Image (cartoon, rainbow, N blue to C red; front, top):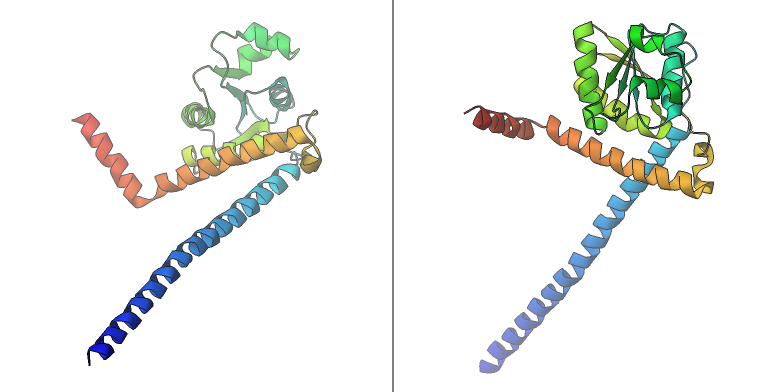
Length: 234
């Protein structure tokens, strides 16, 4: 009888050890599987993003109530000024201008007559990033009753810009006018080291922005934000 008990205990111990080994092996496998799924998701997202950017085209006949251009190079502002001069919209906002930069300096840098600034151009010197660009655009567009905006920025920056603008102006029509930098081979980004670096960096920013916007849109997050606002008011 004692031998039977001892044998049963031994068998039970072996089964417990086998179960522990199975669990120990399952955890790394689960971690590898999860990492593989996340990696595939990131790669798929990046390829979608790269396709959107490389295929971006300027609309042939854009028209809107206003034009907004995000600073980041003379090509962007030149493109926005050209649209304004063609009568594509009645007014232009240049957002994200360095506070030390004057209208005269901008006019000289892009070789445009200064009187266009007097009649039709507004300059935002407060925005420091794309999130603030979108907020300043809302503060500019809504009081003027602008329902449609031509959005001018670099092709690789456009997805993130539109995401931020849609958060601030969900009822507005946004018309993307992507600017392609001549020194970047975005159509063949996989052949150009600099273009690839820009694409990877901008995709990372875009993915983080989408994650942040998704969390902000969730009901628990909205409740927390309302509670934080109430505490500040108290």
